Figure 1 (tube, rainbow over the protein chains, first blue to last red):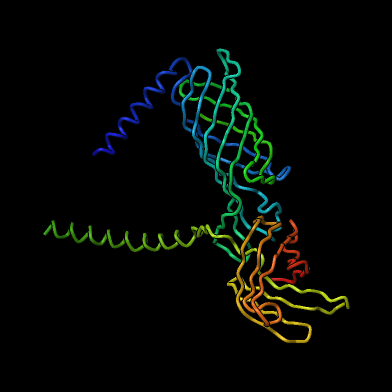
Figure 2 (cartoon, each protein chain N blue to C red):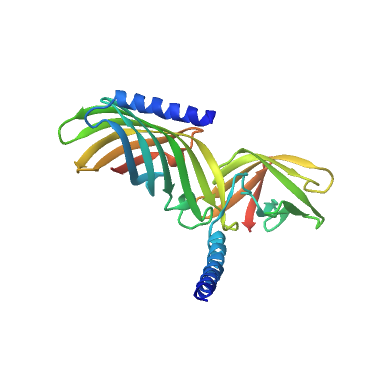
Length: 180
Length: 140
């Protein structure tokens, strides 16, 4: 009972906090994230995920979760080192408004997330091993390119870097498309 | 009577639904992979420490995926036992750490060796260096 009260209080506190930053294009925001990152130089890694957060007049913050599939597991299509590779990441996204007009709004974004590399090795089928994991930082720009009645499309360009531990294989350019 | 027919029909429908759904569950659970949070064994396989004489070897080492090993010396003596890996650095193409062989390479005593493992991005495993001795990968 006590824990339920605490939960209600937390939700109310959050709602108050969010309402402080209410205004035009402000408030709760939910996105379906998708796109492609270029890992290991030029290898494609499509990704998808969700993000949920709050946008103020200038600042914004979102929690996000994304999953990415490497088209060349272990860096090669031969499958000699790995037959499947994907990564998962969860973290927070911080946004700053760069400029805005009636039609569009551009934001600078900084993602700080915890990533994990998952691999299926040859000779060990149907077992997914956890390999490298650590802190991923991503920074770039996201711009609203189309706004509808209930949803909008944002296009983003960013650069991601695995910083702790340094894992250069996942460093690279990211092009993202955000719906809603 | 009508109620009994309905009940019987319902029971039959449930049985007909449950049997294939169990089968479907088995199929689905078979497809879903197991997730392993422990460090994988990247180094298993057969290796050879070549001799300075061409075509000869000093040691042939077989590391099984299950943690057993078999080592044959150039004098045809052989040793088998178990091994353990401790990684200092774990990456698919380049990893290093400590390898503990229960009976060493020559069967005299337990042996703890520093190892580094290298793999080619396209060709797969390449070599295993044990205390500075470079064993070449033969196969798995």
